[in-house]
Length: 481
Ligand SMILES: Cc1cc2nc3c(=O)[nH]c(=O)nc-3n(C[C@H](O)[C@H](O)[C@H](O)COP(=O)(O)OP(=O)(O)OC[C@H]3O[C@@H](n4cnc5c(N)ncnc54)[C@H](O)[C@@H]3O)c2cc1C
Image: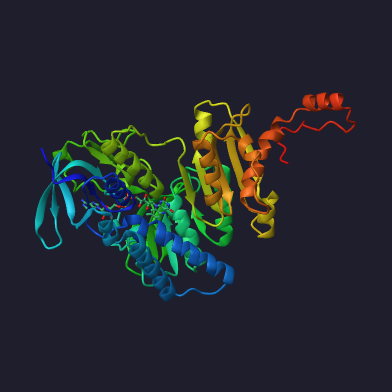
């Protein structure tokens, strides 16, 4: 049976844009459907506006100059629109050879959808393959009083006209932490509450603790092991009641922001009609991004597995390669990086120390401090550490964590090495330019040589060549050179 399209992509965020771009490049007759604006969360409500806020905050902190609400608004609107025009505009994608349709899509069967168009009309369209890329939205806990107050999520945070004087942020994960620093640096009095005992629970505890201390010193107040019980107030004043250490306490601020996790956009998709299995956290997919229905794939935040733009793009490539080329490709779950773009940045790739310990894997941690990276010293950015987890006998890299300036750039050195089977020895033997932060990544790798240095070998060298110098002191197994 002939279908209207070879490939139909539902959603035009990072995942959908990549999937339809790859699809059309493989020669598939492709349709991308988006109900709002192409670009999705990343361009409009996520990565881009949050990094603009961090950049404005950093500049304000360095210069001491007050950045006005009008300046913030102008930057947010200008940069997002520029990115939309340059990279996300429907005409760009039409020019690639695909059709782009504005509307709300839902399945009527495993090979058919109905699209509700903005003019109130609807269209039935059939497709051979489908890629669901409908993303996610902020999860807001249903606490007492929540329906009666105006609250912020990432969806309306970047549309605010006035910078609040004070703000409570619920959640100390990456979004809550980035926004805490940005707003605090811009002059908002920030209080963060979290039911956990520290910030960034998925990152290395020591590095996350270091970052937390830096943020506390900048003036952010944290309440940990604190359960938000109730909220009340209006558009200019909010009272949040938290339960902590056996008692209730009221916190007051102008605004409250929820950074309490994400929920997949699955409710309106008619998944039952297509026979696609889903759970609360998202559409269930296998390692090739295929759903329970053979011709339907799900990628990006809607699959609820990895909520990053780079993973949305990676999953799109995996799904479309499997669907259109029938070439088996799997999600590369071993080498996933993530970065929290605070100052200093906190970055991770691969397996965490916790995972390695839980799995009983034999590894060694190679550490190097920013205080020994010359470029960090000249830039006065000596706060931070590089931690690499690797096999002692051959230097095979299993994972890495970095806290420090440009950590988000440095982490990819280890990602590239891991993906391509390069070891710490390969990195240590590579020439890096001086004085660069990347040289710190190499010097961290040098520690593999240092830790494997043996007094016995030096004894042999001395004997063979008749050298008269002292033997190296290798008694401290944790030494950093
Ligand atoms: C504040 C914040 C900061 C972030 N910072 C980073 C970062 O620094 N780095 C990073 O990697 N990630 C970051 N993320 C996460 C990143 O934004 C997401 O992982 C990414 O946008 C997911 O892309 P997606 O295509 O899966 O979904 P989305 O971008 O949400 O796109 C889904 C699209 O589908 C459309 N849609 C939904 N249902 C339908 C339907 N039925 N019919 C038609 N269209 C539909 C929606 O309108 C939307 O445009 C951040 C997120 C937030 C909230």
